[in-house]
Image (cartoon, rainbow, N blue to C red; front, top):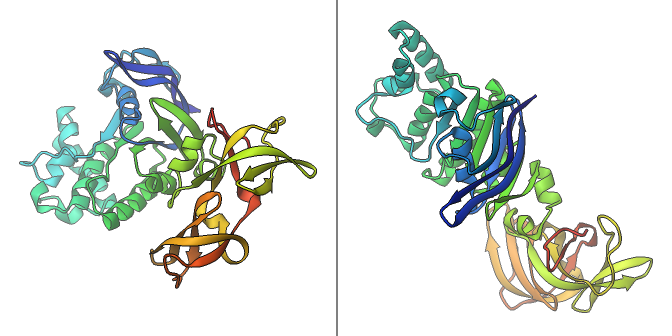
Length: 355
């Protein structure tokens, strides 16, 4: 069953269009992430789902019911914000149970619900503490607990880990994913961090300039990006692009980068020779040493389990991800081989994937 459906929703602020023609269908219990750079429209989209922003055009449906004119409370959604939004004068127990108190629930029922949620988030020993006595991760868990205790139909997360350090962000990702696996509540998560999106999502909606460029599973988004933008936004280190041209090759068409030709099969239909393209090459599909094209090492970056080596060749720049530590120096001559089975070919003008 579809829990949330966005039907051609747009949001205009004066002369600025923040979101345009956004279409999404989110299944019951699904975890969807809206991913994109600052200003792409992801938070505005989330706020429209929450009822914090009016929709300029289009419709939002929840369980098949149009909710455009309903308040956040009537939509039965709970939102977790980037800044936690805890009451500094209230202890953890009162922060978690505050919305239940506002609903008029009796004290015993509130206490029971709060203790249950606190236990699930490992906050039971902290119920008497004030927010100022908690770490960033603990405060974020309290904010999540305040959303959980309401038992909403939908969770909305607006960049909830942005204020945390790297190791704590990874820990909180795992906690939110485990929480979702346990509860199965339909969730929309907003982030600019592509690694975060890949690690916790059932599906990802990559947004750019107010539009959804691609909706798919993490594997689909990474392996078969629909556009050049998605291809370069997803992946670390990022995919390098080399300018190329479609030429006739033995048994079909090929892509020529500088003087090197790579055969490929078009995604659909035929691709005429002479078409100008950009060819995407991911770091894990570049091998160094042995056979290949002559190249010169520009930069060596060890990052623990792998080393990222940037090289210059006749077609431009490549980055290779090599397992372990690599003893290479800038300026060294080397050979680089590209796996032709994993090239991604994009139309130069439209940016759409051709192969």
